[in-house]
Length: 288
Length: 267
Ligand SMILES: Nc1ncnc2c1ncn2[C@@H]1O[C@H](COP(=O)(O)OP(=O)(O)O)[C@@H](O)[C@H]1O
Ligand SMILES: [Mg+2]
Image (cartoon, rainbow over all chains, first blue to last red):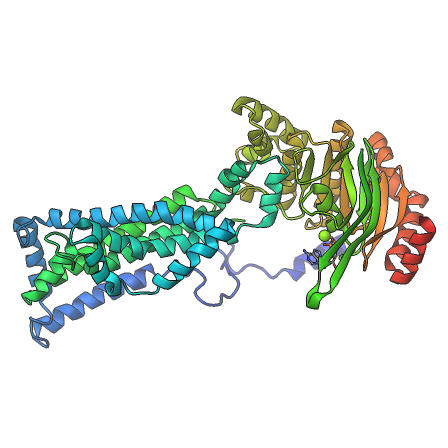
């Protein structure tokens, strides 16, 4: 570099205001949320809601029958924890519900995944199964609940069947969607590396559909929790859904609140666990 | 030898018409040669390659590899795509070993062979990396290593460097020449860059669109010279290189009817 050129270059760069300070970093202006942090806002909102709840019940703005005080609900929770409810311990209620949801999820997944994949691969599977699935899956579970009871009785079978039906459709539909999103180049690359049909399925098709399948499992378990109360309407003596329905008959609003809180906590824990499972099983999701 | 004879492809077009994507293309790819198909986009280059790879059946004509008719994809023809098709859930090493896995090789042999190929493409330090951790050029290197792993009789490459920046592209061209010189693989290579075609091809076929046709064929020795002398400047400044560049440029930009006429005089 000539002297003249160097002088120009140096004089073009304005001096730093404070060489020791960390420079102000910038990013492209975002549109929409673009991954901005919302966690603290949500946490504060939650605390505010509880505070409002406190104030409303403190000043008796609403009768306790409609809205029990937070303290009452907490006390009721401790008492149920200690003495149980309706002749069963809290854990017996929780485990009864958990067992139903997990059994239904297992059945729904082991039917929904292979059938969904088959529907994505085979004209006959798609043609035959499309009709019943498209027919039943928009129906509210409460609508076919009576049929479950008439056909399957009032035992565990009808409860699990109801939950299974509610969970099956989202799993089956996303397994199909997972297949549709498989790029044909990936298939062709595997075929020109000598893959047999089975190797193609196991090494390419299945892992490619896995992210969508796992997401659908998370959604399905959420659906399971939201169908739980309906399932436990069927002559249950155990279960969180049963606890809520039974308490409502006695206008025990505080027990209803305890039940809702327990379902919310478990549903959140499951959803979080599924996310962990996703980040462990499909760490490549969203990359390339 | 890979032999394409009078290969024609018609695609179903809109409102009941047909698209004549490839018109009676004939091509021989001999041992130790690099045949480059050059042409503007839409002139049937990928169609020809897909037919050779076995992804696409021909409407008319035939393709044989060492006398055997090509009836579908197979490990005797390795393919490198423009967009990398590496599996994001497998490490670089396991991606390279994929074809060996399909062939049922024991894990130990797979790993040894894959590691050897990674060395060949200059990626020995990246065996454990995930594909998304690599740059575009490095991913294409993995793609080449993967295609070579099953020891195919021919390497088919569809604009493999088309998405790379021009500096990386030059490096990749030299790498490919190295690989070719060392393995002696025959290669069918598609590009729309005249310079790339001249630099890489032992034979360059120029194609023109609507219908896709081979309109000219040039036998060259720049790539052999580069493999022997490794002097890019000597080749790029060779008047013959510039001369051919201009001739092909005219050919590619010429209106189609003239190109067709020329094709007839060539045949
Ligand atoms: N699957 C297809 N269906 C219909 N037309 C196609 C299909 N694939 C390619 N074509 C048409 O065939 C012609 C040649 O395409 P292609 O071989 O991809 O060209 P190139 O690779 O030289 O750019 C183009 O006009 C393209 O639109
Ligand atoms: Mg193309």
